[in-house]
Length: 235
Image 1 (cartoon, rainbow, N blue to C red):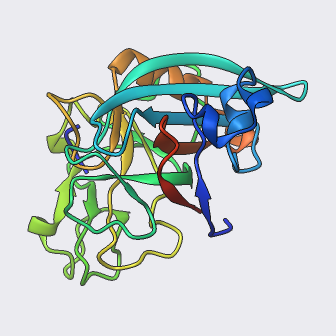
Image 2 (cartoon, one colour):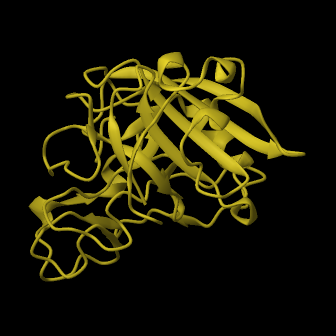
């Protein structure tokens, strides 16, 4: 969406939610206060103040000698209609799905930043993201556009050179897509304002994340609220 492993319901107790965790947890690194971090050694946390927020922060963390260390932070933008619980989100609502997700691969109109080790696909004139609920390749990168995926229900990636200069696929509704839940949710470069359901950051931050992300460390992204008031689904 442009413009911008276990399935269970958890309460993302993010930074501002001291009430959702024992008082002793207040000084612990943010990932240690989450119900689940995906089991890897890298984690991106996209945090909005509340469900109706369209701005917030993205921080990225790495597990070092058994403790989470913050590597970077950047301002973030979310869906124009805020955040929604991933399991019940509906397509076309302009909400960013809260939850814990894998990051299948990265892509971009521009080449990958120097040092990028993450799987990276270059966008071409034939690159599309199919969002057609009737298509076999629903919520998938397709090249070229299949006959059963209507162009009006797909994103021609090359036509968004700012937002998709560089991006990472967020694995929301990706492994086993549910029709109507949503497609094409990415971590990408900022556009003019709030997104249509993605998470976006400044271009410099996107480059830093891509140069840092290590597929051997199985990075995930956790999306939630600092109010800790959103039950979310993890995948």
